[in-house]
Length: 287
Image (cartoon, rainbow, N blue to C red):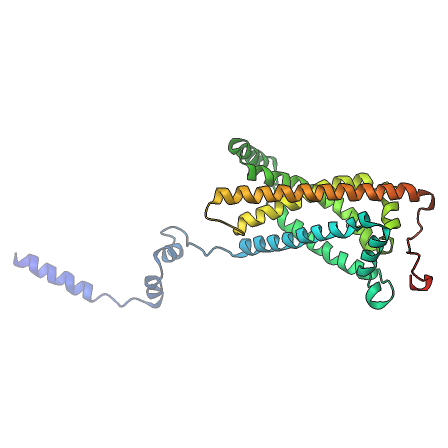
């Protein structure tokens, strides 16, 4: 018994005589277990802080998409002014060329606006393409998921991918023409482009692609960020989807009527293709 007590005291004395921990040991003692273990290689790796860049890129994609969607709707109203007559379309065109403000047309102002839209368009496309399936395996995984769920919003996203891919080529043609030839925008110039320039098939496909893509995109924005959210998510989704399809139908009808008006005017003006329209009351010097 006495020997055990002596041995126990000796052990305590041995423990008490251990050297004080060094600087490195103190640092490890003060760190979380996962961090210390990762340094010593005796445990799981350190849990790193997640990057905020995916969220920032998502916000930029949403903001650029919203800007382009609203511009798309405004643009449709501007070009559809041809339905009110050639003079109405001429006034809209000259407004953007600064004619009513500066007393003379400056088509390069339109080129500046188009250049800004091109930057937004390319930026939005680069942000969106990072979510596309990049190989067949990813495509099959998404397709199986879509077919298994049969959820309307999942299918709408796929149509947004398809129309977005088409827009990258179709809209690029339109934007390049507007950037390099802004002086041709007008009742006769636009009509000649449609008919004599044989551009109406491209614009017909572009109309459906841009209206479907933009409408779906704005609907998904409202869903994603909770805009106009109500107490019942299912009722809110149904209401937003009804509004989305109503707006898509409205702009498709307006776009088809506008395209038909330009084609009709282009057929009538074909013998004088290339001639610019000027209202009779405008003096030649003020063109």
